[in-house]
Image (cartoon, rainbow, N blue to C red; front, top):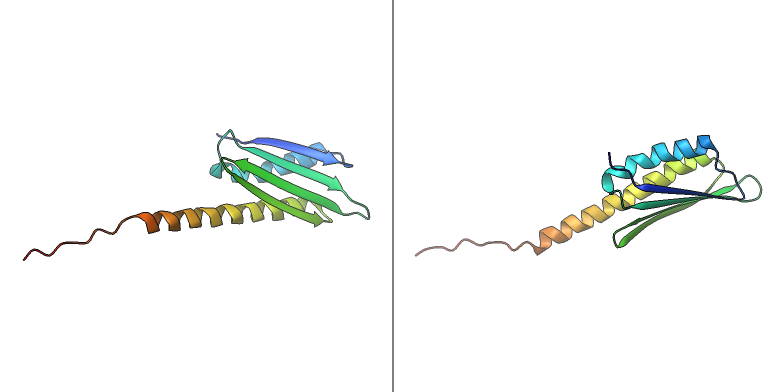
Length: 113
């Protein structure tokens, strides 16, 4: 199975094994869109008053997918960001498909007289 490289960083917060395992499990859903040369950066930042900031950045070929959120719960925040990234990927795929369809020449049949 192809898995992208995952880089987890904690700023003023310890990335525990539970957080690491949960993040890996959720990010694995995105593996089907990318190859093994893809790097996924996840940054956890502890802000004051119980808020955490989550950033996910995936660099793939010439495209960068980015999602960020301030959350009270890291686990639900990770799920939300993975959904945001999936939406960005689907939008890109739809735009690429539309562009591909628009560039295909329409062959007109010639009427023989």
